[in-house]
Amino acid sequence: MSARIGVVTFPGSLDDGDAARAVRVAGGEAVRLWHGDSDLHGVDAVVLPGGFSYGDYLRTGAIARFAPVMESIIDGARGGLPVLGICNGFQILCEAHLLPGALTRNSHLHFRNRDQWLRVDAASTAWTNSFEADQEILVPLKSGEGRYVADRATLDALAAENRIVATYLRGNPNGSERDIAGVTNEAGNVVGLMPHPEHAIEALTGPSLDGLGFFTSILKHLAGASA
Amino acid sequence: MARVVVDVMLKPEILDPQGQAVANALPRLGISDVSSVRIGRRIEIEFTGAADPERVREIADKLLANPVIEDFTIQEVAEDAVPAGEPS
Image (cartoon, rainbow over the protein chains, first blue to last red):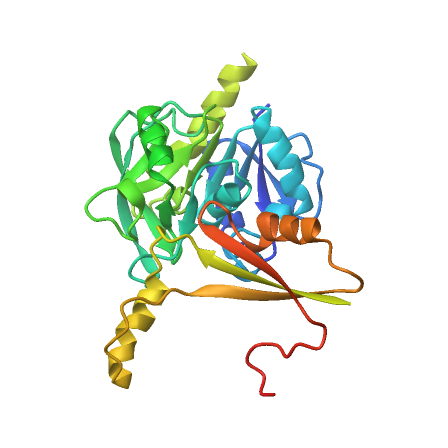
């Protein structure tokens, strides 16, 4: 039986459909989760998709973090449930304090929409084990509040503990500290990523197939965990 | 009924590109003696009864501000105080 990967829909989510499709293309079963339902329906992992949950009111991710589904995801993540937050999902994970730091307005104030080269720095997490360490990948980026910030001690700890999952290559698109595009928690089960791997899984619509690696990684991780 | 005002500001060490954009626009008004502008958010909360300072603090800390990047101050104002921005 294939692994069941939950994909949450908040009011204002945009990329839940693509995230669910990426799960299916990778060989998993996508289970749609609703923000108002605290039941995770027995999923093995969760994707928080991109978009503008609750219209980005107050701060990006600030209100989504209190959705009933998030209470279960926060409890689950603390117990080892793999969670991937993409773009707005990354913002929600930072607001929920499952990941350190915060995502703020791009330093140049412009929305950035482009295909972005990344280096996968940490190929050891539940969501990146299909990549080689330091592998360079190309996936779309589309965000106005993607500048990762944290205090120096946190940034030093992330670097020392190999918890910077991905960094921007060939130009920092938003002013992120240390070119950070994604980070993970201490246990490596929670990953936040600003660019969108779910848009780079098929030649027809994506700039590459590189994004699929995040979704095959979680299936590989879960297969290993159940074996 | 109690009215509480919470002011939320980015921490001093966090870059505020919106504030910088405003500062950069000021010379167009002929103003050249401004060295810094920072933008925050003012939130007015009305309670049906008295305001419990501890609960206001919790509201500010958990929702209104993100303590990772923002500081906040809390101020209880008189019931009949005129909200900022309205002509008296």
